[in-house]
Image (cartoon, rainbow, N blue to C red):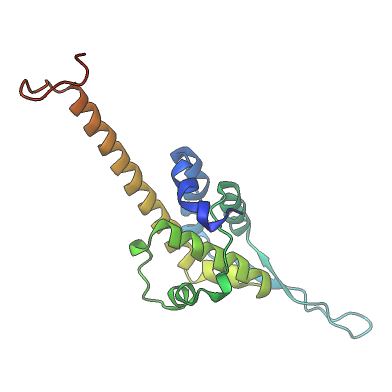
Length: 173
């Protein structure tokens, strides 16, 4: 897990092809009907009951491995970030309006909360919020790369443009 202070720099260093580890899961997530189920809770011969637990679908595991492989789940005091909890609790949240750093912080909340409340991650897939967050990250990344491309293509044109005779040319020494 990456430190929050290093997240922005790290995000800008992830290649578009690497992001496909996460974004390539979107069609499968969209098509999945059941993201997990409660297992256990069985009565044993001694009348004790096995502890129930959530068993997640393979797509949830793929997501978990993808975000960990990309290292986009930052370490921070997520339990005290009330705004994040409010964003996740509010069904009207437009994730597309959030920064990529905020979206990654939301991933941290969901993944970490699942360790303390088994099934939370599955529930966030079931209610569609995880797919919304992933799509918002993709939109955010696509816009970033588009701006980078425009910036560099603009610089290329500027460097090759004819120089203005009234302006000193730094390259003519």
